[in-house]
Length: 328
Image (tube, rainbow, N blue to C red; front, side):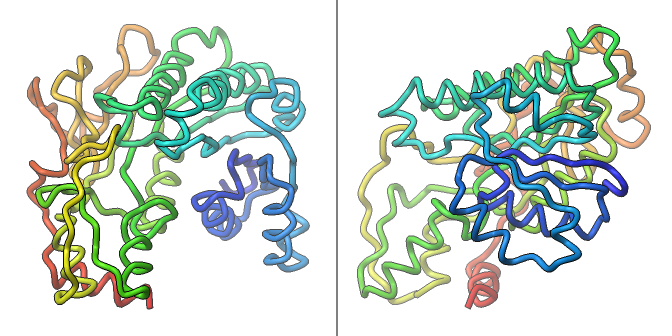
C-alpha cells in the first residue's frame, strides 16, 4: 500500500475503522474512506491528527450508486470492499435491500473499477457464503462469484479481483461475546441456541493483517481462507463465568450449528498454504498458473471441507478466558 491510492468501502464500520488505522502505518499516498454514514465519518475524522488528515479523504457514497463510485475511484490503485448489509434478520425481512447492496453493489464496484483503471480489488466475504441457508449468505455467495468472475471478462485491463472469507470476528458487533458480557453485567443467564454449537475465532487485528497480506500477493480470482482455531460456544460461556446459568433456546432461523468456510462440494482446486487455504478460480479463464501456489502449498483431496467442528485446532476454556481478560 506504500505510495498507493487506496479506497475502502464501508470505511466507517468495525473492520473499516481499524483497517484505516492499519493502512496509515503503511504510508499510502492517499486513503479514501467511502461510506454512506455522515455522522460516523464526522466522528472518525476527529480521531486523526493533522498529518493523517492530509492523507485521508472522506467520501459520502453508497455502493448502490455507480456514478458516485466512478467519481470516487479516480486515480485509485487498490480497493478494499467491506461494505455490506450483514445482519441476518435484517436481510431476511428486507431481502431486496440486501440484494441491492450486497449483489448489485458488488457489480457496481467491479464495473466502476474496470472503468477507472483500478489495479487490485479485494472483497470481504463470510463463512455464511459457504452452503448458505439464509439470504445474507446467499447474497455474499453471489457477490463472491461476481468478483471472481470479473477476472474472466476484464479484457485488456490489468485489474485483479480476489475474495477473503472468514467467520465472525471475536467481540465484534453482532458476535456472541458482547451479548454474553452484557447479560453478565445485567445478571441474566447466558442464552445458547445449541450446546454443540462451534465457531471459528479470529481477532480484528488478525483479519486486517490477513486481508493486507492477500492484497500483496493476490494474482486475481482466488478465494483466500485463513486457518483459524475453533471454540465451543458453551466453553465461551464458561470462560466468561463458570457459575452462570446456561439456557438452551434452540437454533434460530438462518443459523448454523457449525461454521463452514469451504464446502465439500467446492468444485475448484484447493491449495493448503500451511497458514491459509486458497480456493483457485477456473484456471482456464485466468492468465496465471496454479504452479505459483503449488511451489509452496499442497493440493487438497476432493470432498475436503473446512468447518468449525472438524477443525484440528480447538481453543479450551482457559484459552478463551485469556482472550476475555484482554477485553477488560
